[in-house]
Length: 206
Image (cartoon, rainbow, N blue to C red; front, side, top):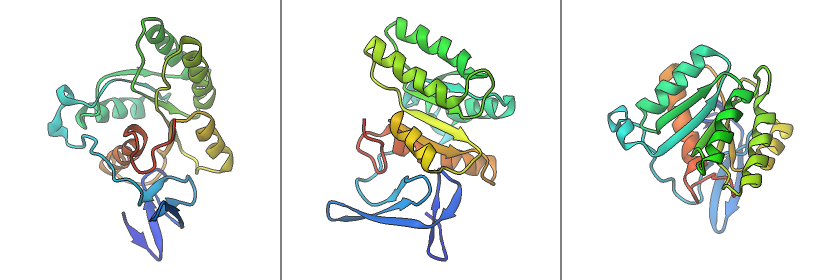
């Protein structure tokens, strides 16, 4: 965690931000003042595969669904999830409507993705409306909620925090923050740690 002028680095925002201090029991916690991601304190993080040598064969997740309308980012995301050993199978879609077709097919077959990644701004059906439709379909089929990671190029504000609460378990990742592909991959893994590991620091309650 980088610190500059009393600021802390938030992997979700990709920025040095003002810290928000709190307590979890008798442990001091440090959270991002923008997106509320827990950055330090509380329960320790479990490991998420982060080395390309791990390989897809040992990936933590069987299936990830991702909707991203920018082809270059979509291809990079598919590559990163495989190289970092996060997912064995990535189903990529160009918009929310296309992703929902795959998602409904999975639910009808009695299956569910272990993670859904949604770009917020997409044609036909945006990421927020797609997430709401996913949660409604899960309730209709009696399926557990798949964790959702939202991609956006804008800063997280109070309105988007309410979106995260309504669609929980969900987290935010600013894809527009400056940095190299390697730095983006590192931020992605850090945020996924907080989203995917039950009871980990910053995990959204289900």
